[in-house]
Image 1 (cartoon, helix red, strand yellow):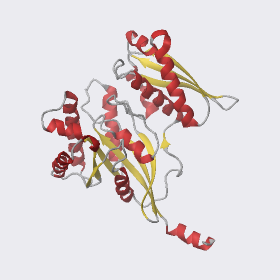
Image 2 (tube, helix red, strand yellow):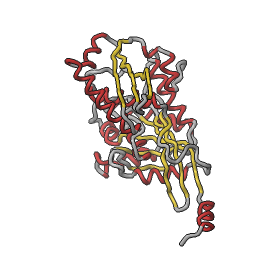
Image 3 (cartoon, one colour):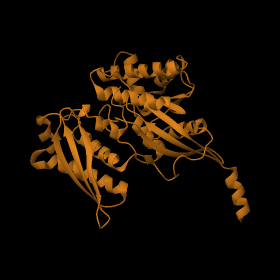
Image 4 (cartoon, helix red, strand yellow):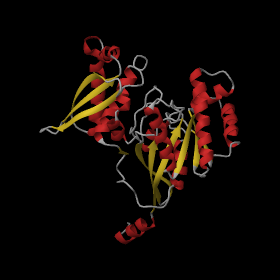
Length: 332
């Protein structure tokens, strides 16, 4: 039987590490899916729409790589890095946020959509594949300029590509002399995620934990609630609704019975988009609200009363308050 003295000695032997890892890459490479996989629960939204992530979201993973050593990795889920138009303030702020996250991190994981990259390298990819490759090259070039020796490559979606093609991609990236190590993963299926997590654990500096061990994310509740609804909005109206839509939590009130009353506004840019969100007889927005409310209740562990409204705001992307709320820089 272990006595108290032995337990105290064991605790003293335990080495803890803590630090920041930026997850960067082209839009839709699987960054948010990887963050959720490493944390072990959903902390950031995932949709098929490109550039879903608009600001830095911090997921907190508790991982152990060797006996008597535990690491707390704060994973910074960043917006996709792409060529932003000079006239697009939101896009420029998003790209700036991604590189800021990388510059401030102890380690960087560059997530690459392996099948899309291979298709494009062999000239049989789609227009979207072509953009993905251009953005991937943009990320690699940015990492090479920084030359900090703390970058890992994660070739994602390996379940969708043959092994010999993966070997070709590994050689392609190793020739660039940018990455400390290459990992083959499927963030969706958790393949290779444990090995990547172990490497990141070792890359973190020896430190006391920066957050409570049971905390999974660092994001204000009102903002997380808005993200949940934005995910359901995009999943439901992926083809019909443009990227330039937003959700804002306007009210948050704890009721006497412990439930929470949440009021949110969905902003669209044109009058013609409002009926798309509402749907016939309000059916679409009711479905979006039901799905959002269900996830919020699971997340908060209490009953939620959710009220959604749709408003037209053409110029919301130039609203300074929206940037301040999410930690984006307005003047980039």
